[in-house]
Image (cartoon, rainbow, N blue to C red; front, side, top):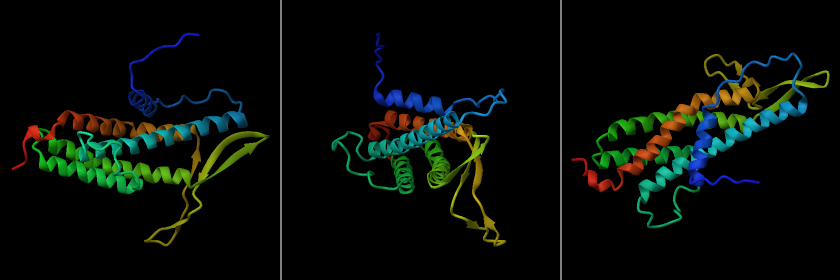
Length: 214
């Protein structure tokens, strides 16, 4: 058995894997009229769901890495104790505010531009967080016929109410691996932009060499 040796760090490998998954192309339509077996359908969907959760956790960790670097760029206290217990909602807001405040403190040449991008990503990842919550808190129903699984339906047990009409709002959708991969492709650009912001932050260091904003 042969082993390949790579110089990539675990984080670099994970980063490459995450970005590859987020850029996964749309699946071609199934050409066979034979329904997918129950085991195959379940495995494919569960695999995609697991990949989504891993990518979401990687994004959450990237926010922590950005926040830790701003708070302690010289790693004087490691491992860091801050930004460990916040919910994802609070974490995104805290790190975004820390980043914007940093660009207002030091005169980075492209600080305002990158801060604007960070602010835009706050909205994008809050939307992804809400989607993640819907996935985790939904009920999944198998659509079977003749013993074969023909598909899944994701159904959120919480029924909403339209504030204007009073009508009940049901959160349901046909669910499959492709639904998840479509959401990842939709957010792939945002994941890459956040990763580039982290890289830019590292390149700005040491911050003081840029001088302070007058």
